Amino acid sequence: MSDINDETASEALLAILERCAGVRVWVVGDLMLDEYVMGAVDRVSPEAPVPVVRVLETEYRLGGAANVARQAAALGAKVSLAGVVGADGAGAQLLRLCGAAGIDTRAVVEIPGRATTRKLRVLGHSQQLLRLDWESSAPCAAASTKRMVAKLAEEARPEALILSDYAKGVLTPETIAAVMPLRGAAPVVVDPKHRDLTRYRGATTITPNLRELEAAAGGPLDPDDPDAIASVARRLAEQVGLEAMVVTLGDRGMLLVPVGAPCIPVPAAKRAVYDVTGAGDTVVAVLAAALAARAPLLAAVQIANAAAGIAVGQVGAVAVEPGSIRSALSARPEGKVLGRPALASRAASWRMAGKRIVFTNGCFDLLHSGHLALLESAAKLGDVLVLAINGDESVRRLKGAERPLVPQAERAALLAALSFVDAVTIFEEDTPLETLMAVRPHVLVKGGDYRPDQIVGRELVEASGGRVAVVPLVPEKSTSALVERIRGMGPR
Image (cartoon, rainbow, N blue to C red; front, top):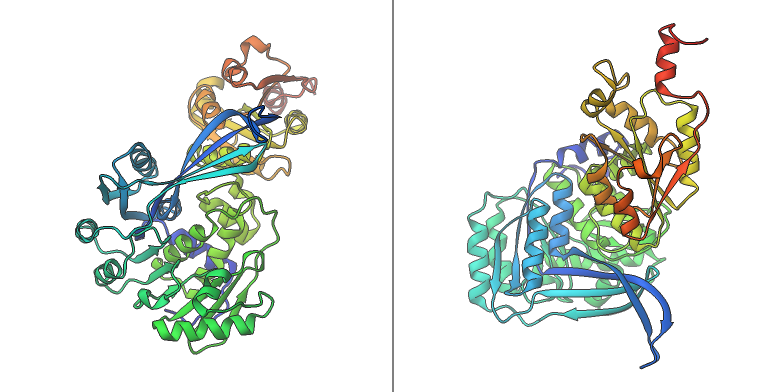
């Protein structure tokens, strides 16, 4: 690795992030299925003093090592996942989600009689009321883990290996010892759950949080005393033979503790924290992908720190999109421009956070004051404004061969720069119906030149309890009128 004390400019970090696309990453560990049941609480049960949750929707997400794999895949990495599932519905659902995320699951072994680890969270008005767990933490049978390792060995060698240990029985010392030689010279990043860190001998770096570091050290540590934390982390790193340890400190950021060099604090950006679920997964996935892209360790930690700050601002385990990380590293608005899968994931997080989603769409060619008035009015109808714009081919079919005047990427960037717009997406179909199905907004907004019965998606939104709002237009303000004026054909 490069000298971790080198100053790393924002441009260099952005270049590393781009190089993460295409790197080959192995993720080995405990797979989980996260289930979120969301609803409203209007009364207390007459049967017992407990709230009654009127269920509105259910969401499934990848958890544990599967969430780590999803995050690495979201960066564009080629991900091979190894672990175990049960011969049950939760296991089948987990594998379906992995397939949708582009994760290779050939090294995932099904074990009849063993439950897939599943965590069900019940949320009422965005507050977690209850969690139910189905799991087995007993060590997996050696025959099963050997089969898993044998399947992994058939894959092309990785450029980084992640051990995602949730102490659910997959990463036994024997399994770790069998996996380590398969990675060749690739760096190994470990998210630990066991007190005895020597079981991870041969790793490049380990990423404990403060509680996990205290467990390994056998005593409490003051989160405001980085020197004491660094002293303990360095001692443990030397025992395990690491190059460095990366201690995650929540809203204090991270502490990079290299062996044989001073510790380096990496402060966190100040953000609203909704949920820390899966933040550790984000750290280990982004850190490993950056190392696979030949990043210096400090640079990899800085990128992972930025990604973790975004993850805790959303509800549940999420995959942070590269655009959001780019924006955090460079303060540019491009993190608002999302593809449909990323937008669907972010919309799900907004719903779980209790945010009211407003949606509107259009070509938005030649941005003008009429557009601004429409968008400002729409933004006032909820907490989050999602804007879907027609792609260039879609605009040509609707407006003619000479349109659009402004390419879709430029239109999206201009709209994303508006402070009251939270997300912009581009759709290539003639209507935004597919995008609406992905977002499932609470409010669908269109301009006053539409009657409610003419608005595409009205039935979809109203069927799920949402509403349609028609916003008056600014008179004589339209792109077509501007085009005519420019051509000298219209009134001056």
